[in-house]
Length: 402
Image 1 (cartoon, rainbow, N blue to C red):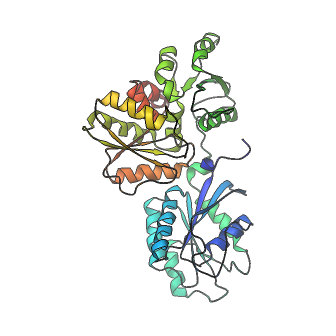
Image 2 (cartoon, rainbow, N blue to C red; image 1 turned 30 degrees about the vertical axis):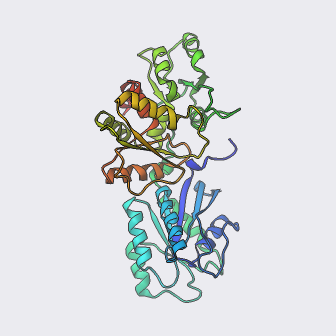
Image 3 (cartoon, rainbow, N blue to C red; image 1 turned 90 degrees about the vertical axis):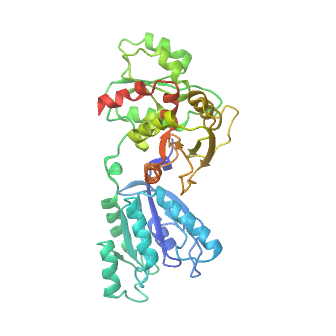
């Protein structure tokens, strides 16, 4: 892999009213003309993303958004797109001009705080007119260290803003949490069962498999990669049992029959549920399958867009397994990418993908939204393990480790 996947980057959202200098700020931070700037309000229509390496933080993705005060019919659609960005932000920057904060900024700040997103304030255009002490004090009531800027004149604030970004980084980025590094030790062997089927991209492995191999190597552990029909011979040839076997969820039952009961077993999807989301919440959420009424509505959320195949995991296999497991007539809806409904109350259960193509903040945001509406949420790997009656075994290794 030549670049850090976007899902592992610190996502920094830039918000504010129209024409306050959001695009100018992102151009200053990236030292590039990423976003079009103009004196005409509403130049930015949809979120604009720029991924880069920014010292001293490392890999980041900046997201420039449309103005929050566009009251036209089309503008309201742009505002909706802007507010969707909140769910995948790790840090937010609110840009205002010398008028200070009004209803839009305060409402945005409160929304960011609901999701516990660290927020930085930048006051732009002070070269045109200084902000009043009263307005500046109001901003400080929300963000204690607002930054004064004249972005059209110079970019002197960039080092100061970078320093605040470093201080605001969520703990998981500071600690650089790995997928499995807290579980394996130097020299441990982990067997990865990776079927090569219709869903495997031609000539490549899927992203979770690639990321886990790299994570094992980073932790000086050994990765043994096999297909299902090679698993038994691989285990027989080992002098000592592997520390862990990780399998694709779709062959969970076949692999479980091969791996001895004393060898820990889990799946890529469950590892990512632990790494990107909240494994305990997902395990708790899957229990609702025992209580589903006939005709229950289930939402399946896929992080990436792809062409569904004949035997697609989300649209064919999981619905089939759920209907077999519950014996109920179930109805399924699907969302892909960054689309996720505000109102989840019509659903009995939300099933999320492994999340390899999105970031932890967005998945935690979706878990939070579901919990606020008392809707159960789980993920692919947990659901499949539940349907195959091996959920307890697949999470046992983490219960013992915690």
